[in-house]
Image (cartoon, rainbow over all chains, first blue to last red; front, side, top):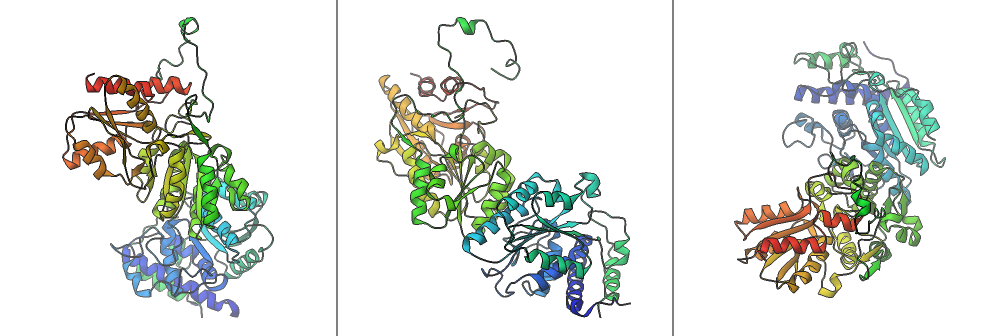
Length: 282
Length: 346
């Protein structure tokens, strides 16, 4: 079975597939990982790295790059998958994921990995750092953007709301934040752990430009990134609320009872890869 | 007083006592004694001088610009000043971001808020990422009469325990002025305790120069070695004069850099036989300079003729007037002198 894709999105679909494949292989290497989140966010990362952002794979610290800050450090498996696909991290390092002395630790840190701009994992840090990055870019006269990805569970953190107020106050129209709403955090569904809806209305009331999209619909995600980039000069920071499906692309993982850290048995990694490849875009 | 007795009705005797009752010191009360030489806002003026030389310097605060002397900077360089609002987590996260873009943020708030409220943000976004952020915090130790909400009795212990962090506890205006360009020259995170407003001026009379990571002997004496940092060096010097009247001659070793600690100089001074080592700090006796010195001496195999700590007790300190509280907790000059006399057997 193959998924039909519209012509201009085919490349992005292939990238998203490759990111999912990289993530699954890392999961297989380690025998564990936040694989369901990685599968869910792969379409967003494909659009970020292969449509929206400017960067030089051979020079990840090039000052003319767009910055990408991963706040939810446990999503590192997903970002590594994208960094590998982008040519920033060599593909053969995928085999080292989570092992001693690897540049790809289980939780993302700036000091370990090329292209990893911050040390996440202690949730609620990313947006605050992003505010400083945006202020710094504006001070330097740079027209680059700061992208930051965080999870819906991080909306529980007060520091996120400090940064949300601040970004609007400083008119940081060079900030594009993406919140992954997969409605799952450590102790259960995010909306029942601590309700955050109606999120669009809240963020708009805080002075942000907001697009809420199906985070697994490449057309919609791409349109949202384009609209956010078009906010340059508006004085408004942008938030893309991406409603994603955990396990996306591997039906038996999509259907599995949703847990923050899903169990995948040893024999299932190959089944997952096979299921993913059945849906490879053509 | 302690937690159990604070809510008891005040004794009638308080009104009858002959002693005038002091009122709670203002939030940002000067620690200068009456008639003491002072200098206004040494940090603010030093930062302005630094910023004239170094265009990377920016100032940031969490609604405490005036109370950390950063208003001097913001008036001189309004376009290089960031008012982050009363949001300390944001303050330090954003400081990390600005540093990552090549700037050198001087971020100010009260020591309690940096150490207790924003600790994880400083730990992860500044120290772990090794960002070039200078954290400068007012009301160190017991320099506010408002009670534990504003008394940072444990900031040195917390920041000492943080990898990559340099920790400075300056004594006076002279030292703060000198420390500002020195901390800027250090490429990495620094935490400095701040004295603001009319700040005592003491060390200029000792031909003193601040060097990062260096302890300096300000006076020598055979009867006791006082190892001190911050305002306790000022108190130790005052106490030394009082003790001299009683024919007790004490040495005062000033240790403004708590981390990295100048263990070599401390150990060498403590090796001189016959005198007890007394560590004086405006900080809880847990985890600060006292325990750092004790560890250094033990590791070096040095056993002085007695080891004593002058510092704040492991307790939530009382609210009140600073002179009262400094006497109560043994960190006034007179109290230091009394304790030293006891320990030297005079």
